[in-house]
Image 1 (tube, rainbow, N blue to C red):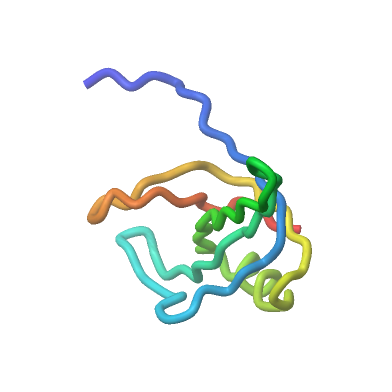
Image 2 (tube, rainbow, N blue to C red):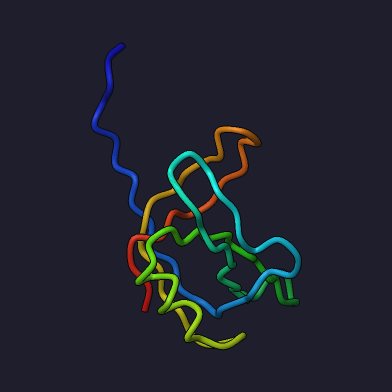
Length: 97
């Protein structure tokens, strides 16, 4: 199998939105906390609200996330991934501010 060196880096910013229900999970790569970055934008005279799902695996990054409150400004850098089981896309957090 031949692997290419694809570029896969993501930087998103918006507001913290804590997910209701199951916000914690575990995969073959470890335990994570999941939240979303809410982005509001103008769309055809109205507001479009997007919720971009982020998974945080590293303990120090989870602590930074949990120190934030709903609606706080947040910038996340990482890579776009898809779940092996469901195929759901998410950002794997590499840094959070």
